[in-house]
Amino acid sequence: MKAKHWLVPALLLLSAFAQAQEKFKVGYIRVMDDAQAMVAHEAGLYKKHGLDVELIEFSSGTDLIKAIVGGQLDTGVLGFTNAVAWASKGADLKVVGGAQQGYHSIVALEGSGIEKVADLKGKILASQKEGSTADAVLRGVTLKNAELKPSDVNIMGVSPAVAVQSLVSGRVDAAFLFEPYDRIAQLVAPVQQVYEIGEVWPFPCMVVITSGDTLAKRKDAVWKSLDAQRDAIEMLDKQPAEAAKLIADYFIAEPTEDAQAW
Image 1: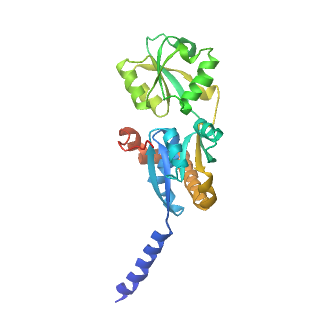
Image 2 (image 1 turned 90 degrees about the horizontal axis):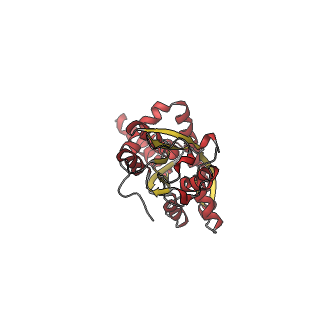
Image 3 (image 1 turned 30 degrees about the vertical axis):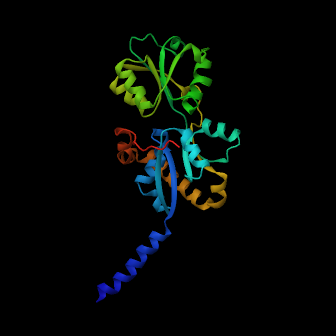
């Protein structure tokens, strides 16, 4: 009989816990700069802070912003140039947190004759599509500092995974990549790193954004999501091996077929 008496309170407690978990949608792109969003989900940190999070993958920052503006997402992690560009055009966007400093490097095929950025003139370079944070940094900082115009280089706008594959097959001479794709390229292709932007221009590559409407109506939930991601960043810093186990499959597997393109 005692077991029955304990069963009802236990069920009520579980029910109350489930009801306390507030529904929340977080958008991300499958890059290492968004690792804190993935770790927070896989480690149960969102739940720890009272959120029932649906993590939604996007193929680009532009698509993620469209979902924020359209009300399909509560928050998202993406490149700061995308956020600034859309906000300057009147989009109802709010930057509520920094996520990651930029780490972008150029890796070049051995024997390509590329030893520095200026050597890219007349070469084929794989990067991300035009308008992305990587593309803005490449054109506005990296090439400009080397006194190159974008037209001096044959820039292919592709996904990071395709960029690595293109290096392996020899379709491109070099690639502008971020982690973990820079390291992956060095493991699977005969390349060497010739440039790393963090040494030249440290910048807040990734930020957390929401809409003004969401911030006004769900401020507490937004703060809870940021607390969870802060805990995830701490885990990445202090327990990197454990954090890596949680998110390894995100990078070993191909991006999901249903990655959103709004």
